[in-house]
Image (cartoon, rainbow, N blue to C red; front, side, top):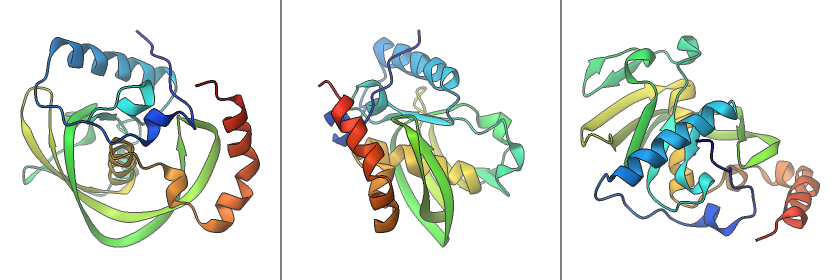
Length: 184
């Protein structure tokens, strides 16, 4: 089932997600619906907050573009994007690695806004799957960026928080329009 995507400035987007301590049938249903919602919206990631649930659950799938990374290791073994996609995870812990990189990001909760966002190019993510499997994912490129973006959501942080002051000023009109349209 396709869920309604929550738009800025809905307060749920600023909520730190509660840890998922038990994967229930409701969590599995939510993740399945989130996956369908993300694909329907042509997104590469979706966090539970973006569908109104303040929990530590997110989805990432960049497998449409296998060249978007230069490496991917899962628990120390080389993997392909197809082998891990879609990546549905709970309770992530990130270690940000190496140089920073600036790329254009968008967000399904900000449909009319994109901006240059600087993030570490590589990440080491400790995540748990819905089956309880603990994964240590080491990667770079778009997958690293998407994992960081969705983890930010789980912590109540938005990509506009990472924009430069100049870009925030340039985006002020769009953000004000979104705030005026919000019916909370």
